[in-house]
Length: 254
Length: 254
Ligand code: HEM
Ligand code: SF4
Ligand code: SF4
Ligand code: FES
Image 1 (cartoon, chains in turn blue, red):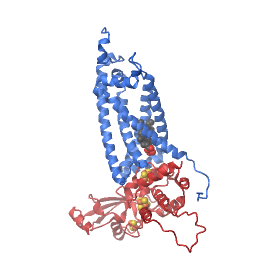
Image 2: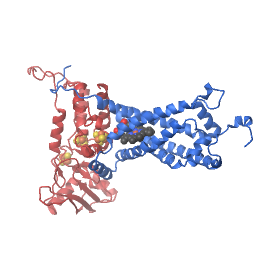
Image 3: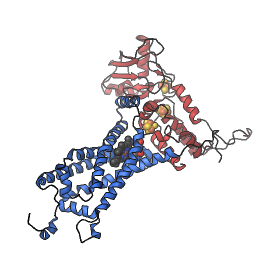
Image 4: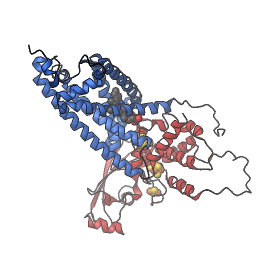
């Protein structure tokens, strides 16, 4: 049908696409971070399990002759995530207060309202800002050292490289930001609304809380495990872990 | 009547001293500065903020400015910030506040007339003009007035009526962090009106037409899903589902 509006200038469709890409990139990152932490937490099942996971992700089953597999796969994955991460950050940062007046208005609004969803938007903005720096650093380190992942090498990064504060901050930032973001995605697009959207929203909030508690607990437990290994392994920092099953092949000279 | 019983049952019975902290400021008065002034009122059974304000004006402070017309939650004139949340003064019982201390501010994001009185009318008119808040029919110009209007499906009429309950009080505007930061943002009451006409079978605007109205970052893509509107609309209108619906519709035609 012909438009009823007098002005016939067609509005740009870009804002719609940017909003969708902002959400899809957030969704991709959110899902990735859940899988990522579960993989990282394999250390809780022992060094052998963590090494098996590492090798699996390096597709070492395609290359049974050497233990390393293809670390380039890891670098590729890290770079892909980095691209999504930058796209998401670039789009989401459009929503930051863009001047002092907006900043003040939002702060006073949050203080006046004591309204969870509004306050948590601020949490997202702050954690997003923090992740922009620390997350980038982490991704660049991984992308440029894809072959140096493993029970000892990763633990050495916590302790000997001294990166544990970065990991700890990232853990909290990612888990709060991601869980709030996933909840917001659901209400923003109305994906699970169903017959009783208010009830759905309550359930989503509860789910968000549970997910946050679960992943922060899992993350803290893994953090402690890596730090513990890192401290024990401090004097041999940089050496690779030899899986229990391969110990008899090793030359016991050192 | 049930209010009375409840008030006595929870111990906030008649006779309680209420403390009202009210923002006083008259922008018309040269040299006047915003300040908080405290008034004491003896609570009566079933007292609303509106009743208390009238008592203050009659007995203590004749110059106090605030708006009301219907005293029944219908006209939408008495919106103000009550202990941090925008709400209708005529529908808020003083018994709701166990501490007996009530802070009143004028609705932010609107032009201040004086004290608790703001110019929502001016805003609402501009909003209505911006979105074309009336039926846009393709045969409006050559309608035969001797022919009866087509019947509307009663279910559709009910759905439209549900959204039409908006009293244009402005609470959703003041409860919106996005609106506080960005003056040009349309705001939830505007989205609610768009949703209402979008639903109306007599309005022939297509989604492409609506995109011209709300398809940018001052429109639906600017909404950060803080849901202050959803949680503070005195009429409990379904903001979250309607904004999500508009967002999906606008992305579909992008
Ligand atoms: C560079 C780092 C990041 C920055 C600066 C950033 C910033 C933001 C901001 C400000 C928002 C709110 C957007 C809005 O109000 O519309 C947001 C939303 C979101 N973020 Fe991030 N973020 C970053 C990284 C991440 C990561 C690593 C994840 C995954 C765990 C993630 C997941 C999400 C999700 C799911 C949303 C909701 C998307 C939406 O509302 O469209 N973000 N981000
Ligand atoms: S949508 Fe609700 S809060 Fe907003 S103006 Fe209408 S009645 Fe008031
Ligand atoms: S959902 Fe939030 S940002 Fe969107 S209109 Fe409502 S209060 Fe404003
Ligand atoms: S006086 Fe009419 S809504 Fe309160």
